[in-house]
Length: 298
Ligand SMILES: [Zn+2]
Image (cartoon, rainbow, N blue to C red; front, side):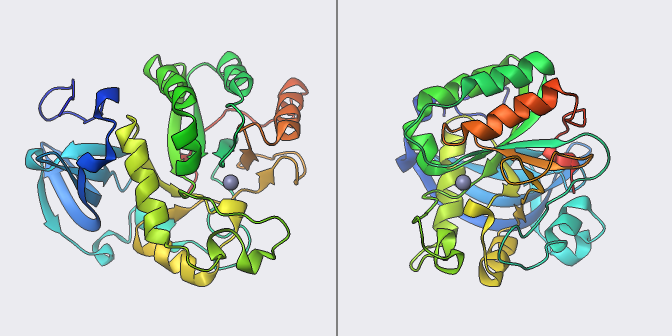
């Protein structure tokens, strides 16, 4: 496997690994893992070529990592043993409702900036990204990526990763489903992931695989397309150990952000008005600061 890092450091795939057929046995797990003095939970296991990798999460900071199983000592565990951790508390905090279920407001000061990359034929709004970098170099930004966007925007995605590598920006990759179904005019109850025939596991796992193959590490957050999900979908998501991420400041729909707001814009070319509002709030001093990592929100 083409990985540049030292034997047991974080694994990050390089561009030459872009072949999803090399993925075998991608599955959801819940294990406790230790190496040196640090322990974490594993929520996915996968095989790439002959190497078994785990997607791990620090249950207190919510930071995720991709690690070689042979470098860790893991054992199956149960959530009951982790109910005092921020991770399991965040998983348990979701309120079932059709629109905007999950985490809608974060802790403390500043705002949690999130951008959705729903499928789009238009290029990434790089100006928005540059504006964030210029205003707050090294700022955290959560991008909710749909697999279908990723498949069409590999160059834009590589451009984003380059910004991360040069520490201009710190991106948390949120899963936004693979196909992101949407039929204009259909009621919410039959639209988005509630359309008949949707396989939530496939939507989750295929997007995670694409993120990993392109050199990113998926986070523990998932944003439902349209922010729409029924109780069954929310239970299924919970079973995959992902936190539903809502928003209380979708800029085109909501009043100005307040401290702790989870701000939502669409830098996929489809919602320029939201990006204009973002610029205006920044300029007018109406955007609570600093920008904070979504991992700190629950
Ligand atoms: Zn979307």
